Image (cartoon, rainbow, N blue to C red; front, top):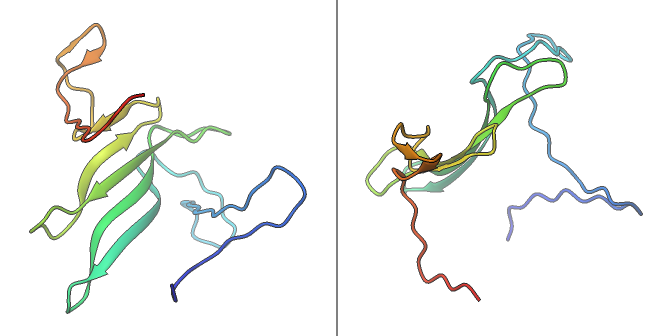
Length: 130
């Protein structure tokens, strides 16, 4: 592969390398002005060339998932894919700040039994439990 990025940490400890995507609502370098609920904290975009331009096939994003406070930054991760014939990604999976995972929906449906949710899309193919 001729296009790659490596982040390597050589150290005799249990710490690994990290890639940090940071966001502040400040307008100067080094500002730490608090971000707001639903603010996009970072995005990784996956794109491919269609013969004319690069087009987004999918993305992973992290948003603020509630009002932040001192040492408190609730977040949600979203995973989006672009369907065949579509021009932009749509959300396929979400992990919210409470740890709930949503497939094909972005909130808990109102119809639930004992806290169990039945209105969601989930499929396992060729899956074997041993």
